[in-house]
Length: 210
Image 1 (cartoon, rainbow, N blue to C red):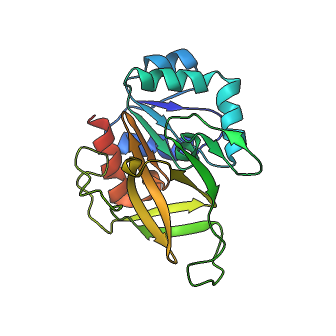
Image 2 (cartoon, rainbow, N blue to C red):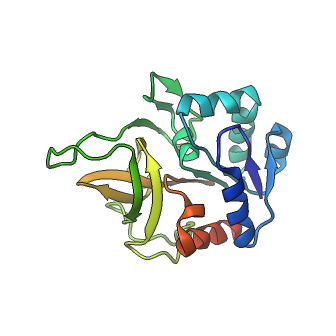
């Protein structure tokens, strides 16, 4: 499994989690290795613009698009999931990979009751099925239960254009956050599976089975 190194990411933790899940991680910032990969993981922490700049400078943005077009499974984590979008509003307007139609926007500063809440949204949250999705069969969440706890930390969130691309949601004081997306060979997780205990490792195991 090739873990894409674009300069921003918790690569050691992700690599270790892949090993524990039964995979053999290869860290690479080489576009040709990305194109040849059998499976890809796109991690990321930090700002959207910096993440995209790291991909472009290494030629990894086009390599990722080509790999996905060829059917290579891609798992994007945290900032990685946000970079799947068409664009982001984080510190200006920035273009993303365009692999999942949608935009990245700030998490509202208040809950639906109007009370301020903490930004970034940090800690453990429960996953829920989005409206219209009956289950998680055939995805990395297969075998996970409604209400599974996962760990995340983020100030912005991906808002998919297509309801069918939403894989899982979570709730933050009444605000619905898209916690996971799926589109073709692409899966994005806003949360950190490598920090989500046995539930997260199970998701990585599922990805290895693709």
